[in-house]
Length: 327
Image 1 (cartoon, rainbow, N blue to C red):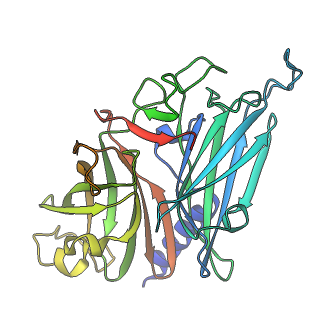
Image 2 (image 1 turned 45 degrees about the horizontal axis):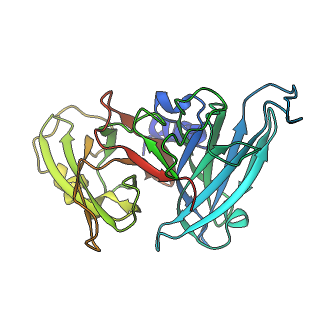
């Protein structure tokens, strides 16, 4: 590896450690935060952080600080799709950081989401002041990669209930919360072989009995298109070469690739991902066309890992994303 590439990768690793990236919309505070992964396996650990950015220390008629919010942490186990709940109170300008295994001792891997609640009623409310992020480390305490939490604004007036139909479920559909994007894109990936890469997928159909199928349009670095599909249930972190060999460097090098020298001795591509259908494997629910989902991407090269959220389409998904608020 050339000295220039080593320097570039070193800088990328530094940025990953210090400044987890996200799509532009995800940088705005919200009332609902989704963390794509927590990993508390013996070889890993996850540091989770959430911050109340509201700067209002005044008191209201209930003798509570106006800027206070309760936060419901809901951990979803990625292996068995069970949940673990915690509640934390954040005062104005308060931040809370915790190692996932200490906060949730009951499961080792999956995803979680945090909901802003009224400190009086403990019901979901509009409180678009929450931001958060996470950093995953290996067993030696070395930071590997990070993500910003994906933030969704409540569309109710501040302090009002977000669960408008009182069904105990939060709809990411442009009425209760901001809508889920129709498609998601990986801006670039390096061919697997010299590189390792995982795709994290989160189903938002609102029922763990469903299997979700997503479709991939994969383009090499010379605009040649390929296709792939993948089926998962609830949540998965999967190596992309286990999705399809189209992601491997050995396959891409057999295609009509860009002849320009990129200095890496390997080729690259980009990906568009769309929900295809979701089917209830128990048989109690209807088939869902164009199911909503979220995704994140992590990639490693020569021991340097990076993680980033994916780029979202302007178009909203016609099917609302669903997360449970009360169980």
